[in-house]
Length: 628
Image (tube, rainbow, N blue to C red; front, top):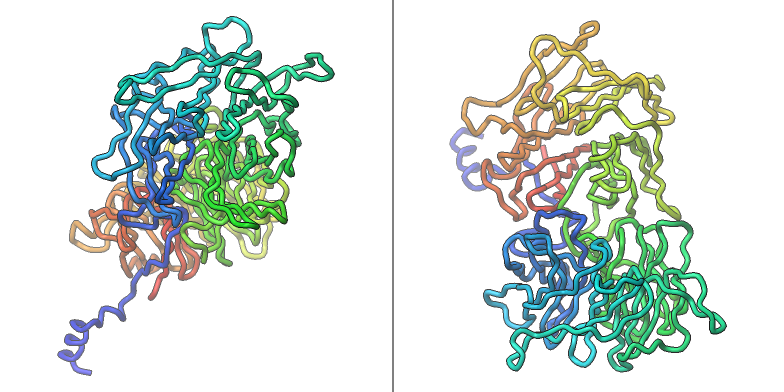
């Protein structure tokens, strides 16, 4: 074939024969990409509980952090509604609807909580704004306002611990929304009840019953007995209904206890507890059948349940949590008396770790759970598993197990204590199976992790990069138990140049190390007690576009290396044995949110021809296929 013919073929599509990185799909963001991408704004996650509402068009309204997200049942973003004043955030366990207006609780920029509203009809230049109504001052700020999703007589119902009462008392308030006749609206105390720690309120509109979850004295045989978390029911005048209060469902152990975080959906009461506990009750507060979900850590703390649709055998429910990352769609099977999760709607605003196994398991650390998916899962698939500990480094796979350094229970634990060596497993059991295998490590901000395996030997070496001091730490590692030596940690010495900011490390079987270090890849070899730099790779050509940005992460499998170039919004595929460029994914210096662009990619994991990258600016995982 002559040169001219080759040139013509290239013009007609010969580039299709070149090596390329092909996008396969998305995990963790039900909107996938472009305008439908689900996004949650940056905010303090400890103050971002979310409720859910559904409108006449069968679209869902949930928290977007610093906005309200309107999302279709297929998981795609339809509209993102800003909140005024700027700097306000959604912080509402439940959402309420009256006359096609959405109401929710939120934090003003000052930190003060207010009741916000936005019209659910029309779709042009819509804004959510606080109502000109002052909420009653609470006795204890950490005990939340409770907003009933359903109104009574056209008025919103709010419960709290009013500061004006000295004794243990819960106040139930009626809020009349603003109208033409009453532009400012008003709020008034309807009644008070003896009790404290209100956690939920719901209204049975047809019967005009008000359910409240909190800490109440129990009435048995006409006498008041020791107080407990319970559900009480009242008439609008404050008279308690016969048979109430009813003690909340029991759980295996505190702090998983139910506290009356109640919803009324599908002719049933639902109560929730930490770590994904969910209980279904009849309208008299008795188990129907009682606990139905346990130790489902992705749910964290469920906050509201609503019924979207119903057939003779099933109900379609939406379940929100104390985190705005995602909500679940689930089926309640009336005959089997069981709940099954069918769709995860939302995104991944925090990605702390990433791993891809040889047999196609993807594990990702988030703010409050370590999630597991299969490679072939869809963008809106529920995780196959959620674990309580959260990996903060890449993982080392060993069959069905993997090892990482992990935060305990939630990422902000790292503000108080160092991460711990932890083994994770994809197998699902009764509760969290993550297993701590050592004491907290000396590193404060570990980022990269790699295990040097010596073929045929059970003794290995564990290497970890630490962002807090720019060091690479090493210790002995016992492979059969995936257990590091707690007392052998020490930083390695690098001859000559000081490491700048190492983020990832790959330990090769021959003892050499590959290190991603502030815009360059270093190849280190051990020389006695020190390591020396054999090669330094920061570019693959003379043009400026062929240089890395300062923030890079990497993953290596064989002679292939994938480099995530965060600031330049791309992935670079190299043959590191020859320091040879193979292909690129993403547009250099051009962020985007479709299937061919990246936005500030960070963590990356490579296994064979498969890869997954944390497309962090787009709050999703992108699955990729490497085609040589």
